[in-house]
Image 1 (tube, one colour):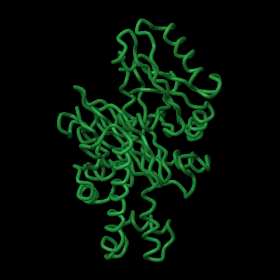
Image 2: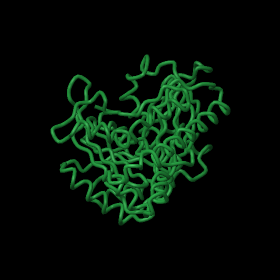
Image 3: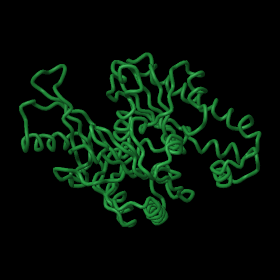
Length: 362
């Protein structure tokens, strides 16, 4: 599913672009290149911590701090590429499936989309960035096609793009986080039986303050939800146990300088709690939809970077569970340490999906 909220700056061949994911605790940048025969290579990436509360609940609270961190991250990457693909949180984007006559093409289609958008979007169209994607023929109406609309307030799009501009970068595409997740999933779907075809796959993107849940049926999205539990809970648990501030807890966790008892006293109980929350979220999904089971669970996001978490979650929920690595089928550039990339891969899930947009229209 490819939507870019009408920034429309693609040429016939897309220019190099970096995937830029701005999270609550860090900025992630990923640069990919073609490696021939439909293969890709990870050239560079970086995870740059953000000051506390610079981003709150998906909203940028201190644009100057975020822009400074982004500029620092870009310089450390040592790349010449200044074009970026960014994403809005799914909560900031209105999406709606509509049916239109299959005979519509070109300007006729665009005009009809605008007419329909006027009916379903609760803002004047001159206040939104609008895009659409033809999904294909309608199963229940052979003369019609399904079209997906996506719209976001221009101020939301402009604010995100301004962050890149303040850091000396240029936003070419504004994506949606949930669609970037799907692009990253496509890179590792081959690890699942039959590439995920005919199965229910639940992707849990574990952020600092919440878990974003994206469930696919036959590799098509059917359910999107946010669950109020995140990786920052681990820092709170560490700070309470060892008498630290949450900032000190995060720093000690990154450096690996926590007491030897950390794994037993804090990490294992936290992992069990996280597994229980994932189980609750799955129960809500199966009880509130037509789908009564899940075949596979993928763990992504910074909160998935816990050794053995997939085993703990899998044992708790009784479903095969994998830690997401969208780079598993890619080669690594000269500046990449493969083992470090594998460790960081879950946190780079959305950034990887965004970086893949470079290859959409080649």
